[in-house]
Length: 234
Image 1 (cartoon, rainbow, N blue to C red):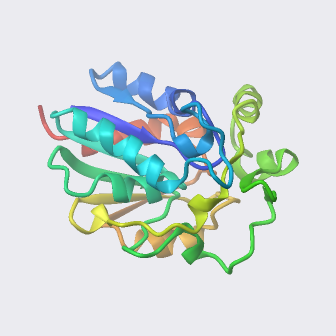
Image 2 (tube, rainbow, N blue to C red; image 1 turned 90 degrees about the vertical axis):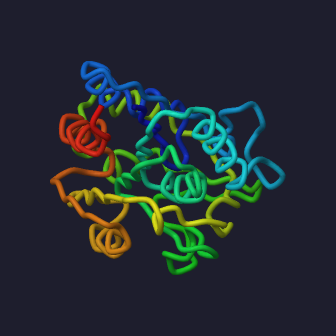
C-alpha cells in the first residue's frame, strides 16, 4: 500500500507540507511520498514564460505513480487536484483519489475555468510569467488555523510558479473512472466552501470538516484517518 501526496500551487517541499499526515500513516505501516512539481521550480528549471508548466507536473507525478505496482491512494491538495486527475488516468495501481479543498476539472477544463478570469486578490502575477501568493495575505487566507511555528515554516516555503498552469487544460479526468472522495474544508478563506462543494459534487463521496486551507497541518489526525480508511485491506 502506498500514498502519493500532490501539493498545491506556489509552494515547494511537498514532504514538509504533508509531514504530519505522513508521520501518522508511517506509524500504521503505510509508506508515502510527495513528488516535486517542476512548475514550482522544484526540479531545477526556473518557472516563467518558458519554464515548466502543467504538462511537466503531470508527467512528474505520473512517472512516480507508474513506477510502483502496489495499490495507491493519491491525495491531492488545491492545485494538486488538477495535476492528479490527469496524472492518474489509466493507471491500475491507483485505487482512490482524495481531493482536499481542490479542483476536479473535466477534460478540456483548466484551473482558470473555475474563476472569473481575473487573479485572486491574494495572488501576485508578474510579467515574467510567474505568480505567487502575496506573503502579507498568506496567513489570513490559507493558514489562519495553523500553529504559529507551522505558519513560519510555511511562509519559508512559498515560491513563484509558472502562471501558465492556471490556463492549460487537462487531457484526462481520472476521477471519472477511479473512486474519489472530496474533503471540504469549511473554514477555508482561500477556496470558498461553496466552490469546494460545487467541485465535490463531481466526486463519489464528500466529507466535510472544520478546517482552513491546509488541514494536513491543522487537522492531521482527521486527514490521516480518512486516508487510512481509503486504503485497501492488506
